[in-house]
Every structure is written in structure tokens, then in C-alpha cells.
Length: 252
Image (cartoon, rainbow, N blue to C red; front, side):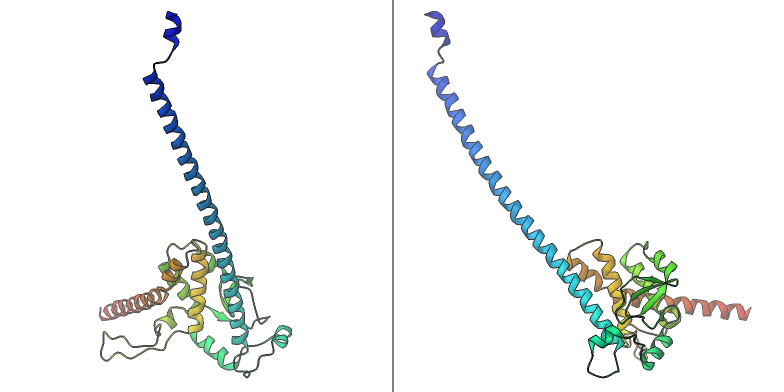
């Protein structure tokens, strides 16, 4: 009897153990419910990410299509309002004389080549040149060097020099509007909007490899004009310093 009594758990201890067990069961149910809610949220987020990825892919496809249509329109510029797309596909088009003279006057390190086809893929190599789109070509070696450039600012400035050259940049402005800092400032001719769009597209392709956040991409692209303006100012400052050095040398 003594051993049997020793084996019986006191009622108070039993009730305490029972309460602890029930409390643990309740906590387990809460944890299971929380886990299920978390799982559903993850499933919903995965669906949203999948939809977002599809939207980004669709936007890129639409952007590529828009660029190709712009290529066709630019190549047909000046030939009349009607564009026969079937005819464009089958014939090799040459740029209009007015366009050709504009490009040759504007660029000294890049050149406009008659496209062998009306719509050309970007970044193709041909005879030591890289095609940036819409018939704009740059030196292949300089293009590869540009790809390892750090930062949007330096990349944009170096690309602008590759496309226009320093001789053109120093005599141009981004918008063609005179600076407000000088009352008697004479406005300089603006840079080609067509080539500015090529700069933005190249920078877009570079940024898109780093992020898919369209807000961040738009914010970084909005600084293109600022970067090119800074480069023009740097070139003019360097030219003035060189002129001062030459004048000082001549005086000696």
C-alpha cells in the first residue's frame, strides 16, 4: 500500500501538468495557424512576382518593338507619309541626303552607316564597329572598354564622347537653350535628340542588368542630360586651360 500511494501523483500536481499540456496544445494550434497564414502569403507573393516578371518581360518586348518601328520610320524619313512595311522588309534602304549630311557634320568618332537591312539588331559587330541602334556605330575596342566603366555618370560621359566626339560636344548644348547664369550668353546648337535617345537606351540596357525596379531605372535615366552637360562643361574648361597654357608659353 505504501508503494502504491507513492506511485499516485498528487491531484494539485496533476492539474498543473494538465493545464500546462492544454496550454502547449493551444500554442501549437496558434503556431500551426500562423504557419498556414505565412504559407498563403508566400504563395500570393510568388504569384505577384511571377506576374511582375511577366509584365517586365512584356514591357521589354514592347520597348524593343517600339525601337524597331522607330528604326523603320527614321530610315524612311523624308520619303512620304505612307510606309509600305512589306516593301521595307524586302529592299535595302539608304539614308536621305539631308540625314547623311547631318550625321557627318555632327560626329567625328562615330559614323552613320547605310544599314544592310531596315531593322538591325543592337550590339552586333561588323568590321571593328558595334551597332548601338538606328544606324549608330562606335569603335568595338572602345565599346568593350566602356562596359567595365563604374557608375552611370562616367559611363554616360564616355559614351557621349564616343558618339559625338569632343570637337562636337564643346560647341553644342544638351537642349539648345542658353544658360541663365550669363545675361549675354549665346545659345549653342542642341545635340541630336536621336543620338540622345541612343545614349539613354544604352544606359537603360546597362541598368536593367542590375535591377528590375522601374522606379529606380527611371530615376537613374533622368540624370542623362545632367551628365552630358557636365561633360560639355569639363571639355570647355579643359580647352580654356589649354589655351591659357599656350598663351603663357608664347609670351615666354
